[in-house]
Every structure is written in structure tokens, then in C-alpha cells.
Length: 258
Image (cartoon, rainbow, N blue to C red; front, side, top):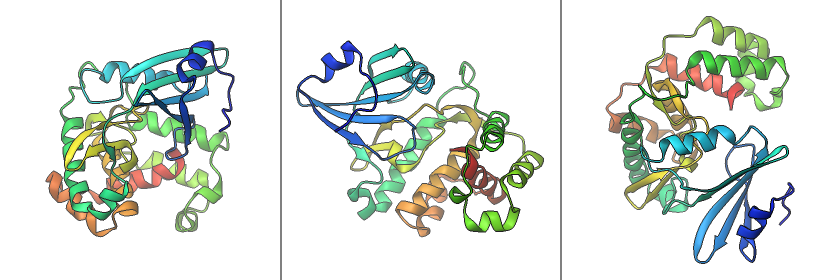
């Protein structure tokens, strides 16, 4: 396996004589390496300086509030960041077990959202509300970070170009229904052991945000992994009547955001 970055001495020492496997699932923008060390599992993320700083800070803030991976080592060297975390027990909700038992998966997702909603946002230092998200989208469009080939054909047919999508999002923004948000609450980022919720990974986008953003992401992931018929079961389990205009707004935003 090829590591794309120059490792520090501490990282080299930690992974010495370990079994290493590159993980390609997810959209973190980092190189992610699974480390098997003395019968324990760890994950090493490596990225350009600045890409892992927030995840490190958020993992620290969440450590006593939510079950998230424990930080083992964090280092910055030149223009590169390194973050080693201990693996959560269980498996992600898009594993074969949950694909074959989607009703159990939906129950676990509902528990995961209850955990998210239990976090008090009054002292949360991370604001990722709708104005922040629109600024990210605007930056992505203006700096040509989004390719047309990554946008759904029906979206381009409806709006014509990326600037028109951005214009629509800015002109149709609504007031946030604020809560704590995971920020990327898709099935690969929720871990469980059979019917028991275990915890979350990839919390680098978490913070205070509109509740419909997380719901839109999870709806999209449920549809992709379990099937469209499980979306209504998801909302019913949460006792939430979906506000379709807000969900569709964020589903459109996600084409330019993540």
C-alpha cells in the first residue's frame, strides 16, 4: 500500500510492524488508513494542513458529549496533518448485515438522531448554519471546484448552470431550525452492534445547523442503501412529518456542497 505523504517519526513508530489497509469509502478528502495493532484497530487520516484541524477540535469537544472515536495522536508537520483515532466497535450501517436487515438499521438511525438532538448547542463553538453552507457553495462555484459531470442531469436541465443553482439557493434560503448537527450523517458514518447504536465517525462538519440538513443527508443515504421505501419508515420512527421543500432544498445544495 502506498502512503501519499511524508510521515513523521511518531507516526512511523506507531504504525511500525502493523497491518495497514487503505480505506476508500467516504468523502473526507483525506487519505485514510486502517491500522491493525496488537489486536486493536485504529484509523490514520492524513491531509493537507487545515483539512483535519476542525475534525480534531470537534472530536475533543464531543468527547464527553457523544460516542465518537478517541483521539490517539494528532500532529502537524510542514503542510500536512495527521490524526490517529481508535476504531469504534461494531460496524457501519451500510454493511451487509444492515443491508439485509434494514428495519434494524432504521431503528438504529432513529437512536442516532436522538443522541444528536440531545446535545445542548448553547456552548457549541461551531456554527455551520445555512449562511455558512451558502458561503461554501458560493466558493465552490466561483472557484470552479464543482464539475458539471458531478451534477445530476435533471438538475442541470432544470437550472441550466451552476450559477443559476447558486442563485436559487441564495434567493430561497429559509430560517434555520437550529439544533446540533452531525453534518454528514450518512449510513457509513453511523456505527452499531446488531440493534444497538454505538457511535459516529467523521464529525469534521458538525456544529450548530438547521435540522433539515442532517435529515436530507440521511434520507439520501437510506434511499441509496436500503431503498426508497424505507425513507417514510425513517421519518415515522423519528415522529417527524417531512417538510419536502426544505429537504429538497438541501438535497439540491448537497450537489454543490460535499
